[in-house]
Image (tube, rainbow over all chains, first blue to last red; front, side, top):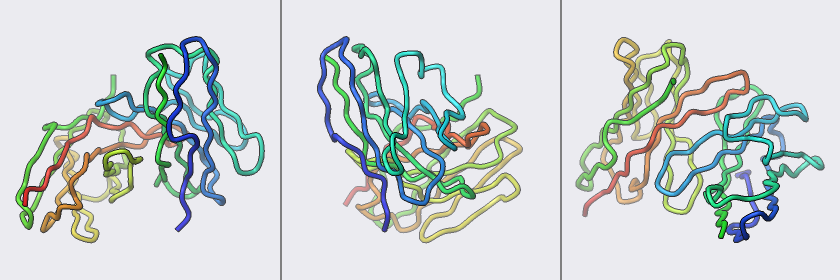
Length: 113
Length: 112
């Protein structure tokens, strides 16, 4: 069964450093999303991406964040200058154009020290 | 602001019993809801969905009930098994990009 993959599984970085989290959505999906989950809390929407542009973003997704689909398979989330409060699990998700069902990847645990 | 929330943070049931997990929502305009299961260290996994024009939907061992009058939905798991132990989230779909708004989750523990 096709699945969303994410790399790395765990990223440790120092405050102020840039990080790039990578995702490979399911191949025929057209909607792509990033969510984050701070330890012990609920999953929060960050950004959605469709037709090569951001379609929606939350208040969390400020100027320090950016997304890119550099080729036909990868979808990346970049945090320009990480803060301690960026420490969380980051999930990528994708869905087909006709369905609301989103398929989630296993997540990347980001630890900012 | 609008939110989706859950009544109880934890629920323990005996193996073989039925489980009921509840969720309340506040957005009257919500018209599509999804239940997700999240096992430790994994991403959320789709369980079942329901549209606002339905009151009930059944899947394999799971049933979702929607009461629009009181803005409440529930997930019923029949004959709960150890593999059902996980955190369960309800979510509603909103926005032009169909993003999910998640509730805070209920940890289901299945006792032997």
